[in-house]
Each structure stands twice: as C-alpha cells, then as structure tokens.
Length: 233
Image 1: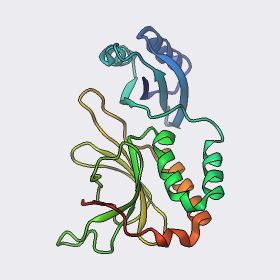
Image 2: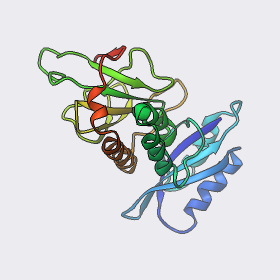
Image 3: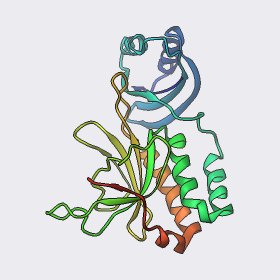
Image 4: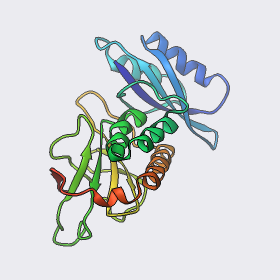
C-alpha cells in the first residue's frame, strides 16, 4: 500500500539522508518527497512510500523517532498515485472540457491530489452556524469513500482554511465564492494510523483549484441543487 509520512526535521545537511536511510532500513520504498515548508532552520517534508501491508508501522515510527531533532507529524494511507507536476493543470483542462460534469470531476480528483480520504462539494445554508443549530448542509457531489451521511465540520465563516475537530478529524475547507458552495476534504483517523493536518501549502493549492474551477464553471455552480445526501454539523 501507499503511505504518506509527514516529518519535521532540522534543515541542515545530512538530516534528510538519515531520514531516507531509516525509511529504507524499515522496509519502505520512497517514491516521492515533497518539501512543504522551510523556515527557521526547520523543514516539513512529506514522504510517499510503498509499504508492505504485513509490516508494522511502529517499526518505521520508532526508527524515525531515534533520529535527533526529527518529529513525525502524521502517517496515513495515500489514495491514488503520487502527485506529479502538471496534474493540477490537467485537472482544470478536464473541468473545462466537460463543464456539465466539472464539479464532479474536481471533487473526485481532490482525494488523490491531497492524500485525503474523501471530499465533498457542500451547499452551506445561511443559518448554518445559528444558535439553534441551523439547517444542515447538503452535498452536491461526494467522492468515493465518503461516508453517508458525511460528517462535516462547521465551515462558517467561509474562508479557505485547515480545521481539526475535537475528535481528531482533519479537514481542508475552501469556498467557491458563490451559492454557499464549499469544497471540503477530509483525512480520517484509523485504529493504527494518525494523519497529519492539512498544511497551509495544501490548502493554498486546493484554493487555487477551486477558484480556477469557479471561473470555468461560472453560473453552473448556482444550479447545484436538490442533492441526495444531507449532512449535519
């Protein structure tokens, strides 16, 4: 299976090599490394690994924890192949080529692009966060693996951001800027794996995709209605 491992490490020569060697000794095959952040002498890197389902993740985590200054921020299953340069542009080209299915195309692609478990395009009513609970959000389209009904966080005020709920669920929330439509991506905890929260660079990437898709789809987004799935905060 594919695993995503997020590591914070000292940004100095040799440390990345130590992490890579430790992953290899633990039985992981590194297929991609993405640098999310370099600031104040520290770096945040995402490693995508091919990992044997029979191997224990604890061995991998123990090896990384033994490297001075290294912290594991999360480990979780990656959905789909590692992302590559040009995938965002290719996705937007697909949205533009078939705008009638453009929203579904975007939502279905997001989990693979951001190593998320699932994603939905939800319509958020104006009374979502009212003291009386408001009416539930409705879902215009849901990706594969989305629970029914999906558990959505409170997403108002509508702005692009990363959210973590009290039970440990991680969400990236990005509004389309019209019709109360918002894209929500989720990483769920499991009994053995604990994913990292969405990094600001991931939220920015998702926001760029949503903004570009909103320009492409235009008034079609206002027609997202009568969805068959409902969700409550």
